[in-house]
Length: 351
Image 1 (cartoon, rainbow, N blue to C red):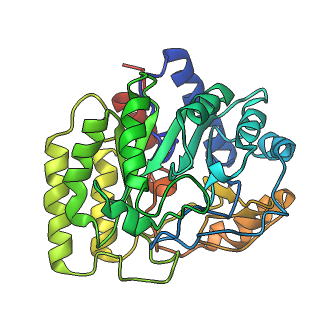
Image 2: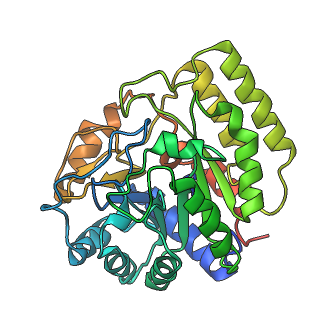
Image 3: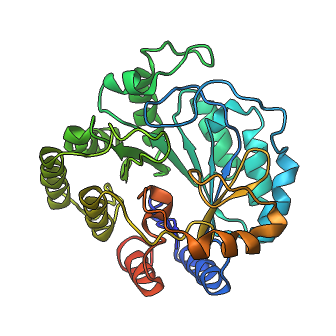
């Protein structure tokens, strides 16, 4: 996202100068041409987990899923500079590597991010996906210990894991893969009322494992449940205190990838109960598992690929929703000069 990967679970680290300039150039052109900067391909609705803060979970009808070759049409039409491959749990698709190769095969290959809970990840699958073209692996982490399992409710029906084994799996696999030196793993921690007190310890865990960390913010729109939103003065005070501590420890490694302005906006989101000005459908959008366009994963108006202009007219230009500040929008709400400056100055290879 010019990519923080033009959106937040997306900070580019150690990117060669030529690649940095290419991403900046493509993002600039898309911005000016009103094409999406980021497209999230939700390649399946099925998931290995039943997370408390999510509206996916368990098995779903997979019969209408787009086949790998079908993604080429979306890439040719939308031409995003950043792509998320997500779900559900994208690793439930045996052909996910083929999907990645299709997405990366055109004349303008995007920066590609796999968003996953990693319950099905292995070293072999990681290397296979890297070879297919994944540039960054975004891994969900809600707690820095086995409470993560309780929040995620991962099912052994879909993997070798037991319901109590996800955190153990991550704590073994992530440091081992980080030690390979590819610098492409980012933990994504969604701040909720349940884990707000763990913000600092989650940062410590990312440092211990040798990976980066991106904070995101819980949205009640996904499930309709406000219990996980930060609802009390005590919770907001704890959020501010712990984010202050994280900010004080920021260094040049990009270990905490959120820009300071984004963390400040996250504080305001919780304090105000929302953030207006969302650019869903315009600067980013979702392609569902069966190939429909949605403005975002929490707005369920569906459009054919050919009707994106109508989606912008009917939804984006009238959108009043303020009920999220998730990673895919957290940078894209910013002005173009601010977005460009933050990425060039702080996190890309341009110095």
